Length: 220
Image (cartoon, rainbow, N blue to C red; front, side, top):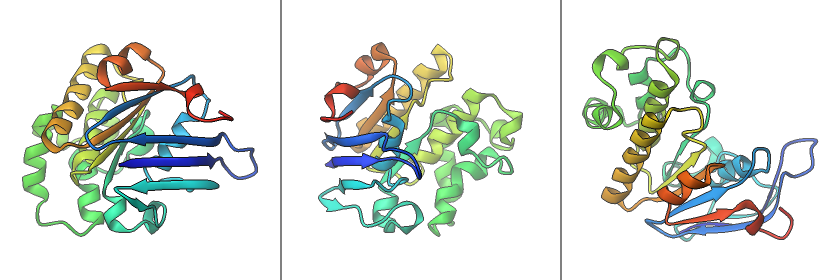
């Protein structure tokens, strides 16, 4: 279970953008979080992915409360969640090739020996050939870069996926392709999914259930 219990979160010198929010996702479940831009859903997604420390509340992963955030989270918890952001160019190191970008979490966790095999496995799944893997972010389209970012999110075989407006900047065909990759991964592994967005039609087709931002807590 991925549980967000009574989360309040914000940023320095600002009022909290998330107040008293609770949400639970069962193993293998896909939950859509629907809300307008600026409501705080991306902040909540970052909390769920252990990338942003809440001011109050608790994140529980598989029965264990989160014990840290970002690089201070225990490796077992940090690697349990894969995340894909809305803007791939803001989440990709421009100096890295797409191949190095995808392998970045493996290197960061000391798993260097399995990189070639994992790359052979993942690249075709997300639709990246050898010619694209050798390029850097400025040499590919947003859609191609987002494919690499999705592969990066899957490379450590996470038990949970957080997709924060993953398809907002993409055309319909790329959106369909990336959603299909996520669903194939979920079918094979039983991973749970939190999909954040403002497109009700997409979320309702993609997810087992969709929750609106106004339903989440007493002060959202």
